[in-house]
Image (cartoon, rainbow, N blue to C red):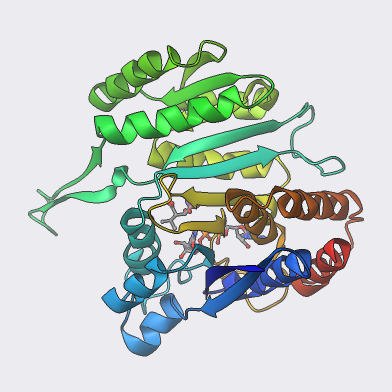
Length: 349
Ligand code: NAD
Ligand code: IPM
Ligand code: MN
């Protein structure tokens, strides 16, 4: 059998709890199949920083580059935890990986599974994907502080948008729309206020649209998009948007489709130059960490996205069907993280 060399970064909080279940499912669904997964675990995250002072050493980044894919749990200290500067590990580990490995497509699918309760009274059929740009926008650390700590303090974060960066993610989103039955793409931005970047995104969508005559496209300002995500989420098919808007609307999308515990993501390097990285949309959830209360479904569905990205469509579909059946059968009785993981593992075995 061929071998996939997989790096696993469980991280902090519920990260290790949900990742353990995703690994069980992955091993069960690939057992006896044509491809075996060879796992290497990396201890990184806020805990590791507290113990060692390391976020992501250069040699670890090099080692990670040698893997075929990365499965990531979650990192981060509890908000208000004074032992660590806010966002240090998020920027120096998570964002550093997304940037270093050129994860320009942050793919975040949203589906309301049958039997799952949405907080919306009339959710309709929710089945869309958000193609969130992953390497630019206000995430790049451009900006700074002048006259810090004075009443004249000036703080800026500059949103970086390049023609190359926008075009490649927009084209990827059009391709995905073209492969879906409804063939519809919505650009979400705020070009009434963010004129410079907004015009670049708008022009790029119009130009790339010419390559995909079967795909219809429309536009929503991000504030209006949040209205429709609540009042009429069924209207969406493929959304393409920048890094920050994509972050915000995908938490909302998770909430309307039954919760953050079900929301999966893939940070994709579509060129195949670097390993892609798969992780739940959620964070380390310090409020429930260590209690076996976290839903591992998001981590398990992220492993399914990885299987599909690696060309293992059959295995990906089996995992997705098992999660779908598991969530449909839920009664509301609380189950531990491991109980959910074991049930899904049994279903794919
Ligand atoms: P969070 O996603 O960790 O938690 C938000 C809420 O959702 C909490 O009430 C939590 O209990 C709940 N929740 C999250 N995952 C769940 C699951 N699988 N099952 C059930 N409930 C779940 O977001 P936050 O509280 O804003 O952030 C906590 C820490 O995580 C911060 O340090 C933040 O920077 C970090 N963070 C990391 C990532 C990542 O590693 N990819 C993503 C988001 C936030
Ligand atoms: C996410 C997270 C990250 C982001 C943070 C932790 C840097 O919220 O993956 O959605 O903003 O991208
Ligand atoms: Mn987020």
